[in-house]
Image (cartoon, protein in one colour):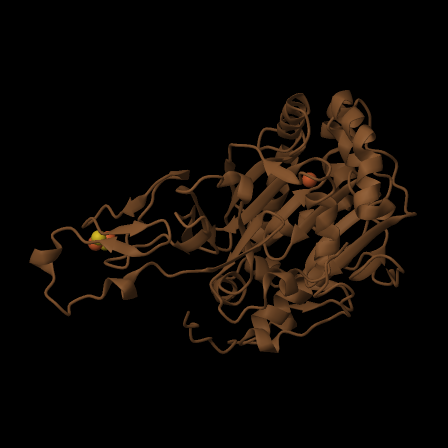
Length: 446
Ligand code: FES
Ligand code: FE
């Protein structure tokens, strides 16, 4: 796979923030030229979530999604492997698949009818004998552009950058945290059928940075939603045993009570299920991670995959220009759970975190406001404060990554923007600095 010619960074993006002082320049949420650089330096380069194994169980199963603004088809081919390739015809460039998901043997372009198989190879040209003489086209050279595909515990990721590090290295010690969600029971997780799409006139980074560790907003923005779901306010904030942990720009904000997020779902059946399997979970992933799971927590993998582990909502934030995002949401359930528990999780998850849910609808309006006020030239040139918890960095004997104490904290957001600037400033992956000492890189995490 030939790499694209990398562009020299047109400017120094570090000038848009001072994370030691704790501020970020508002133009990164608005400026078209900065967004154009993001498409290359972030979205054409980083590993991004495209599907879970449970969404593509059979040969021919496919779904369509995006890496940045590049449409991709993700399909399980006849050889059993998953391929991801550009959803664009190599003849005149039309989309070759308009469906969101399905099962197919091939994708036929609407315009002149070229067809591509589920591995993205060009397999058929209508009226080939009449249109093409010998030597006009070598079909093997004109398949759809392939992305690299690697997976981690059923989660399938893709990148168009052949020089990107392996997915395992890209995740690094974040795998230690991910396993608390993906691998806390033998069956792992399963995506329930159905994708919910919604749109907001907001910059994609506001959604991601909220999930990477903005517990701070929940007590205010979601006060009434929380009361409606739980019959009372959110549990009192307890600064002990709450953390922000960041690895390569990925983040997880959590407590250790093992219960808060599950309680928000408001279903005794779900609480009983997790109470029953907790001993098994402790045996599998250890006491610490068995209590990270389920606690009041939220998480994001750089650049645009987020989830609430105990609430079971999982989402990607697809950029649609600097001022619009497309949100895709799924409910994730423990695969080995009884059907009734899966249904209870699905119902509760959708009552809280879908576009009409009691908690989700509070957020979008705020992020649209954060974005829209930048229409003002003066506003756009101001700074935003990201200084909460500047001095709370700690070394923790058991928690990998860069760890800060406390749940109300901007630490993970600062480290997300640090990674953003590192990538924006890098011509290739070789220029991206490693900002912490890995503990588990290259080794299994349990
Ligand atoms: Fe696809 Fe011509 S554009 S066949
Ligand atoms: Fe929220």
